[in-house]
Amino acid sequence: MQLPPLFNLPKSHLQCYGESVYCFRQDLLTRCGQGKTPLERFTSVVAWSISTTRPGIFGLAPYNPILGETHHVTNGTLNVLLEQVSHHPPVSALHATDAKENIELLWCQSPVPKFKGTSVEAVIRGKRQLWLQNFAENYKMDSPKLQIKIFPVPSADWVGDVSIRCKKSSLEAVLSFYKSQSFLGFGGNSRAIKGKIFHSKTLRTIFEVDGHWDRTVTLKDIHNGKVTVLYDAKEVISKLNTPVVNDPKGLWPSESAVVWSELTQSILKGDWEKASAAKRGVEERQRSLRRERKSTGEDWVPKHFKLGNTKEGVWECWPIEQAVPPAPIIVPVSNQNDS
Image (tube, rainbow, N blue to C red; front, side, top):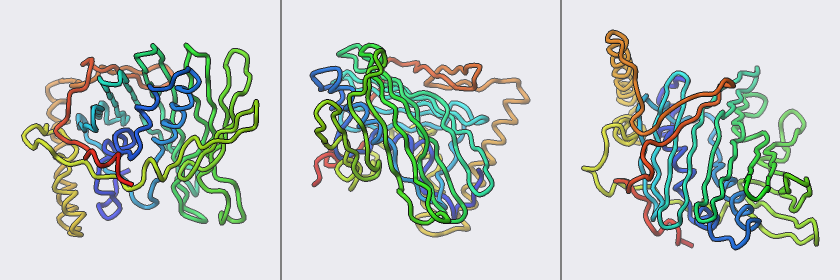
């Protein structure tokens, strides 16, 4: 949706997608590849997947990325690259590699809003894949839906079912993100999560998952009843450091921080007149480029990904480069060590 700057977060959707991967205080992604058994690695992947779900803010939305916009950030040895590979429909692609840990991520996702009277529900189409290359394990997962309620109580929450699967180990998890019903929308169990981890071939449940994805999620061993903490949001995503530009000359013109620089600075200063002008400027340049391509019959092609979609409308993408190079924007190392 097109919103006036007053209702914009000072960042792009691409930056928000990227932050869910590279902004952390406790590195759960590296832990995924350090498990000694397939089950240890799988439970770590489940914890990491939950950590990518970040709380939203009702009434504020990031900028809609422009076609070809990129976001490139490094955290330690993890290099993350995103590109807006389609504008209509909006499709964002993410590729991340960690050469030291032999880990690779590939996402291709497109939000599809559905209006339901007093609420809007955005279904995130597309799959997320995580490879632990040391073990030749590929984990496929999807995303919960973003539900924005306007009445009776305004809220923005992630809801719906998520599946996580590893074909090699035959392990699977089903997680349900939900908010329990309450009287006239007040009260209820907010940001709750419940699910199970099981063998897909025998359907035998191994662990039960329960808790709140923005607080603590526990794991109950069905065999002996032992309960352990699977995920602690405070330890993982609190007190996050802001990425900083380490190499200004290395920034691409398509970088989110460059594309939206004037708008972001105006919002942070509260200069709404200048912010509106800056946003119009970005949008008008995009319309002009679109008209030019149409007049010449030129098809726009992504720089960093190859793109395709299935009959079900689920988009797929493949990175052109095998590994993501180090970025000019970095996350300070202290981000992982602050107490």
